[in-house]
Length: 345
Picture 1 (cartoon, rainbow, N blue to C red):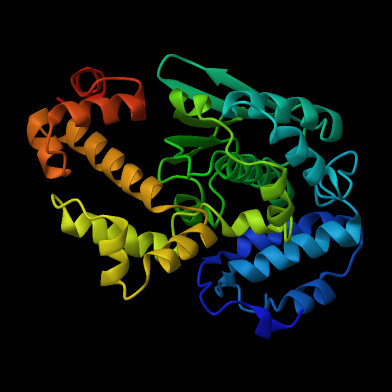
Picture 2 (picture 1 turned 180 degrees about the vertical axis):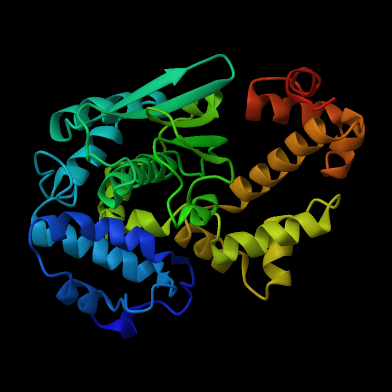
């Protein structure tokens, strides 16, 4: 790989532990990892040196091609190259995210029998569960086993975000192994509420997100598949450069309600360029603004005794009823009931 092809804007990195897990399958198969690492421009000599995420994505795709296995040689049968494409083609015609995830679980049962995916929906929260149908390793903290769970959750979460055209916040994830050395990165990739231990992986999110319509079609899919599935590692992370800049600007301006044109001007960009930059990072201005308001609203309802009207005003809502409607859309619950159920007081 020509390292000069790496985008200068791509500054996100991952801990070396993610690369170690990815290489576990090829090493099991007796492959020499050195040529793959060199081709991707990755130096593992310094165990503290972080890996640029675009080089990690390149290595991801190289291993898939070398092994003809999109499961990295980690499972009892290979997941042949092309499986991810057929998974995507089977999901874009789904009416909503719930149906898409149901189809994904059935497809993965055919091509990945060692892990079972289940979707559980409650009145306020939903759970995406991933469980072993056979032990992937004798040692629960085997790098190959850890990476298998990391990879499948990342694939399903990233694909779900892409299908609905917005980031999907994971409220909490429990991983079925002890904290790995690179556990600090989980806050950037999954959620700050990452916990360890238990019999299965459980990712929790708001159940109303399952009703989101699928916004992608076959035309979108053709462009998306270029560089996939490794490309998913670069999307929908919490440390994306432009996403963070826009989020910080919106937060700093509150209670003023900045629109996209105003934010673009402050960044010395056109609104069109800002839209494109955010799309490259798997996001949009509207989804950033909604996520910011949701996060701040939840935190203030749970951790403070501010009135709902005061919170609405601080978040830039001129009319408290508009805040009520938005909050119900985020959580399936009105603000007062949410505070009663989850508040610290």
